[in-house]
Image (cartoon, rainbow, N blue to C red; front, top):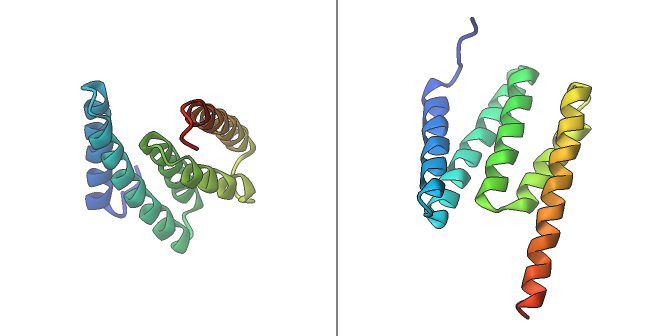
Length: 124
């Protein structure tokens, strides 16, 4: 069993993700997005620390989790940037890269839908 190097940050991030999901289920989208963004920021820090320590497996997991949290917060650009970085990593396994590409395409489709909705409302 491996030891979690930053248990306080891991616990805080996990709690934020749980809070975000519960808030979303209650229809509190803005609060939910805020919690997802907080969790994403923590997860990016965990990924950077893992990379600095040479723990690529942990770094890759944290980068993917951060991308997911940013997407759930509604920040498609940030999420897609992290997914691009993951896809370009030489140490990322190919099955993960396949998953990353599929996730990125889903986010791009969501972003196109959002943009189309804005155009229809004459907002953009």
